[in-house]
Image 1: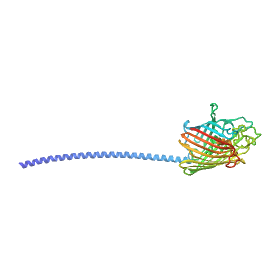
Image 2: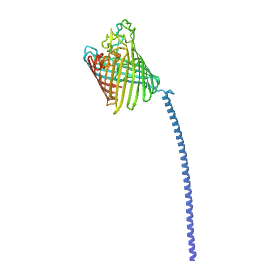
Image 3: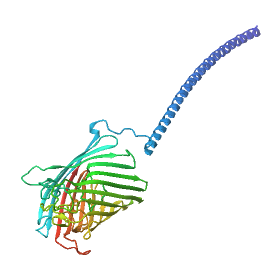
Image 4: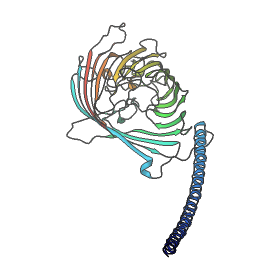
Length: 474
């Protein structure tokens, strides 16, 4: 009985174990199926994301291709513009304010003149002045190739140096080589004169090479050094000019030519004149080149010709001692020679000395229309450039002009009082205080009436001038 009962118990235990095992197996099979489904879902999501990423990559590739094509078009257009094969897009601003640039300056000057000869002009002995110069102008863009320039300036009225023969009426205007108005006279109003009124047509348009046609009363179209023998910096010639440049890389060519009206009015009084009318014209031609020798070292050289036709026999303004003949010789009240002036010039610019700008320059003039007293020379140096705030510039030059070396009325009015027949040196210092605000001082130590004296033997009376300037520009 015991054995039968024992086997019975063992059978029960074995049955229970089989039941437990089969339940675990079923549960395990169910769990594996769920995991497989989850993995399949995850795989499908990854496949969907891969397809989406592929579409995004395709869109980016297309965008990059379009950008590259657009850049190629821009590059081709720029190349065409540089070579001139396509007309450039319009650069004329849309609004009135964008088309016009207003500019100008105001200068306050304190000046002292010391003249050994108190009986001659300039300036009737020792004098002191407080003076102002005010200039205001505007440059307007007419179209892509044309601009106009209009400028007014102060000046004291004086009896015109031209058109003063016996039968002519008095003609008052601003001096051609000055822009100063003297203070005083009971706080009187100061006059403004038309200084520039010109049309500038750039035939080439936007290009590194330029050719301009300029007509009207214009800024000087000729290259000048720091201190020029022929031209006052205040001169604005009247007529028609061509001005161009050609960029050859390290060498740049430049040139100007012009026809200008110096005097264009018959007086009717021709009995005492060798020419039939009071017509004086200037034909001018200039050519030169600037060569970049190495970095921070360049050389500019050229030649100018100025032919003042009609001066021989033209009346000098003897009725106005302040104008007179500006140092040129006269006979019987008229100019007694022609003025065919040749002027070579040269300038060396460098910044090799600690990066400081230095300019060395020289000029010479020879008037082939006169037989004697017909030469002049100038040389000078500038160190530094007063442009940025707290920058300093200093300079020195020496000039000498014999009586008929060039037309005196066009020369610098500060150097020995203006005109020809003088020699001397100029020293100056300029300091840039702030942006567009500077102070400057100049000292002139000159001699008058030097024609006929040998080289290095200045003669005549001494003439000194000291100037102190405060200049604000905009």
